[in-house]
Amino acid sequence: MAQYELLLPKMGESVAEATVIKWVKQPGDAIGLDDTILEIATDKVDSEVPSPVAGKLVKQLFQENDVAQVGDVIAIIETEGSADPKIEDSHPDASIPEEKAESIPGIAQLPAENKATPSDFSSSVRFYSPLVKSIASQENISISELNDIKGTGADGRLNKDDLLSYIAHKNSGQQAVKTEVAAAPIENKPVAAPVVSSVPNKTSTTSVSGGDEIIEMDRMRKLIADHMVMSKTTSPHVTSFVEADVTNMVLWRNKVKNSFEKRENEKITFTPIFVEAVAKAIKDFPMINVSVSGTQIIKKRDINIGMAAALPSGNLIVPVIRNADQLNLVGLTKAVNDLALRARNSKLKPDETQGGTFTLTNVGSFGNVMGTPIINQPQVAILAVGAIKKKPAVLETEHGDVIAIRHMMFLSLSYDHRVVDGSLGGMFVRRVADYLENWDFNREI
Image (cartoon, rainbow, N blue to C red; front, side, top):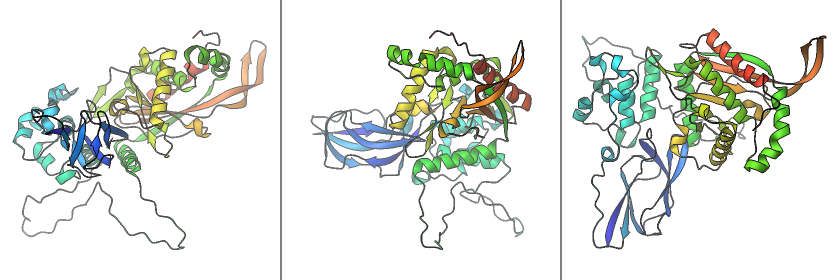
């Protein structure tokens, strides 16, 4: 009998770790080829890990809720055979190519003495994933500073969320808690320092009436909560509003939706139309398609639009349509429908929620006429589209002004006022509205 070491597989370029949320197979269970052994979670996406071999599960090396790095041995499977399969190295670094700091946009312009270099990491006794190393290099965090940050991962390991929380507190002028006190008190003078923790303190909750229900947040809700708080502490939010007359767009969709579904076997919704308008407006105003690193603005080459989708659980996920400007309306429709369906069924791949450069959220699907969405970091803007309502509106005609029933909709753009001023934010959302208002009723698809 041979033993096979099951490694946590690589799940995307930017995914370095995952949380074990459920073991489907238990020690002693028979395993077939491609059988699901366990379920894991990376940020917001839940995935299944199939078995590449047939045999019997001998040992689980991680417990539920433990965090494993890509490349870690997570289980031992006993297989039929005379020799153990050769595995070059089960250390996490073996399966993840070392990410070079020089590959990060704009890193070359930073002072050399502030950068964490690969030699610094190699000399450290603490393990850091490639993603943590990249963020540290990009944010000018030295190896000594990194060693002082408290980690919440397995064995105190520092993960991405720990580092992002530390950076958010640091940028807001607060001092993060350090794991050790390196210096002795000077002249016995008491020093009062603010204490900030990325993990909320557990407090006892008392029900006064006896009828209240205390519900513990699930894993995804905790991640969403942390991400939203981090965004508000990172970016000064400003929101601009525009009302658009989308009558031509609505009438056109009503005209083509049946023939389109018959021809493409896909339903055409308003979402791909909104995505197309946003992609066009981004090409007109490329400085809305950026991110911020310290005092540097990183202008994105690709236009990757995330679309916020509500899950049956009530949580939120944002799958990304990559290179949205290169897709026609048919391609956008198929991409939107595919991502939305797989999001609802928890079938998204980790990479499909990464790399977004701009986000669109449709608050109109809940009957809301407008909203003030929170920016999806590290992006600098997010657009909310409201419900389309029939309203009386003034139309200018060659014979004078008239009042007519029109299909009207509000658009609201929240943007990061550090890099997007009111003029750019206002002109951008106005341009999106213009593309929707000037929709060609005779357009062929």
